[in-house]
Length: 157
Image 1 (cartoon, rainbow, N blue to C red):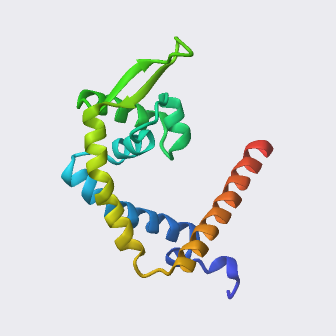
Image 2 (cartoon, rainbow, N blue to C red; image 1 turned 60 degrees about the vertical axis):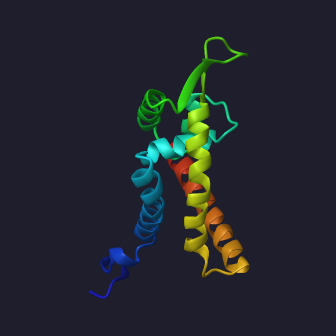
């Protein structure tokens, strides 16, 4: 019975550990945008993608985030109703609507940035510059491998 395929520990399984890692890191940030500002994760991500300068369509926000259309659509509706986001007609393509933060949205975003940066700093404080570079490189390489696997499945499926 000593066959490797039979021994499976979820706690040491890499995809599970990545998921747990991502969730824990997200929760550390969530304290700020959720508790202090009442924003959902999708709303915060939408604001962060738009930043103070970007003017994007909802589909461009989907492309730049790890969120699906439904989450982005809900976030956009909620942010608009709170006066943080406005929709305009694209100057180049009259059929397309684009989104941007309002002055109030920019004020909230600008208020949030130093606070989320402080959390980032605390999360990374025990890492040296080279630790950080290695981690970023490893994350990038694994992401590329994962994207390749997804593309292979899509083309062979």
